[in-house]
Image (cartoon, rainbow, N blue to C red; front, side, top):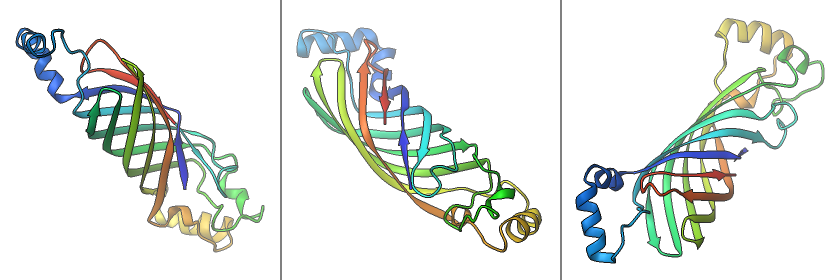
Length: 207
């Protein structure tokens, strides 16, 4: 299990706003007719990317350093009120981590299957995430998110080298649970989002 943390949000694209951007005169006239002013903040379907880091907790927390994480998400707002919004999104996430202890010495240190790791590690996974935000001021959203999914950490070496040099020799015939298929993943934390004056662009921070 790991917590995805401190991932700055960039490029949140709201699809209806792209049409408004393409037809500014029509959109402005409509907004003025309906609201008396041009509407700058438009919610709906969106795509976003997160760039940040992932921190592992549990048995492998001291072994793997926080790594670089890149996420790509698509989703949509399911609730849109002046003081509150909620969204659901599907996220594909990948990360690269550097190990504090290389695989050659892990066996001699007494590591068990829950701690053993190949060393530098690549992970890829998918998450379904829900987010709720409140708006203390017009352009600032403060809220929280929670999600769950699966993750895999594939071996970064050929099978013969893995079986001979790692599992047999270095780990004393033990195998790592981290590299056995898919693993459950949980994300949870606060969110902070700022809506710019461009209706199709916002930025923020997710923890």
